[in-house]
Length: 401
Image 1 (cartoon, one colour):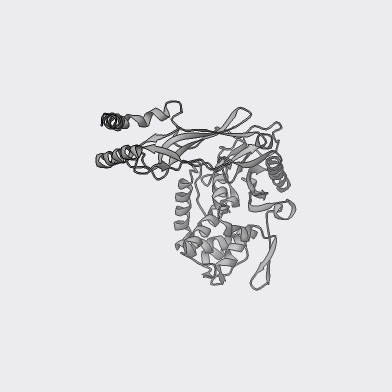
Image 2 (cartoon, rainbow, N blue to C red; image 1 turned 90 degrees about the vertical axis):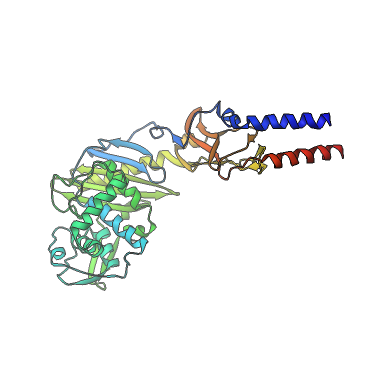
């Protein structure tokens, strides 16, 4: 009986102190509550040189900025504006608010648009599919206005939604005044960084690539031909989109996207003096990315083993590295990736659902590429006093047997 009493007193002491145990396991770890990455993209030896006065190069999945030049310089975007127009249409399609087979009727105002167009006549009806195709492939201003009116009732209401969506995407230096970018307007502005943000959001939707990857097509039952204004679609390996633009003041602009081996990059160039220069600059940036970078998994190569929980109704919890998706690294770094887990040997109940219990650190050549919190998704409740007492008794009698 003395032995049983000693065991009971020991366990009761542990239980009474368990409330302070939680902090002990974190004493040798940084207070990271969410995934942390290096502030800038991975370094590479030879940086690209281009003629564009403003440009940026980013990766789609992680959003990593690989290279930039005056990326926050406010400029008029011309028809690159239509990236946001297309995004709102695609999002409305995916929410089921409109359908590709909807019939869109052309208003007097929509038919009056100049510049790039498919020469819609007042009252002409066309499927939203063909309208969207004309916007994406041929940069048709009349189709853009007709689709905007179909979605929101008026271009003015549609533009209000464009600006709202820009705010949601963190496009802090963007103001839209129309849905086309047709006219020079010093108040209709954005930046290369903001264009990259809305382009990244757009190419998350697989639907849009059904249209952005078209080189030539037709509308009006084959009577009107369309040719993509983005020449990279035909001439650059892996090109997936996205949108060109030009006015006398904005000069030649382009948001170009391309994908190879499961990695997709976005190159935005603004203010080029010639069309050829904008395509060459975009190619230079994209080729630099493909040559130097790749994606690698941050997750541990083997499953993290369960952790035992003292005084818990659940004897184990399963740790999970939160946010440990893929990291963009240089190809040199990819061959030297190490993953370090910092975890206690055991936990003491209660463990809250989602509680951070450790850290995953991803390194290459001694350089930290990212740190991720390791959490317990399900948690573990503490045993009640009666449960604890019965557990002790069971242990004592089992020991005697």
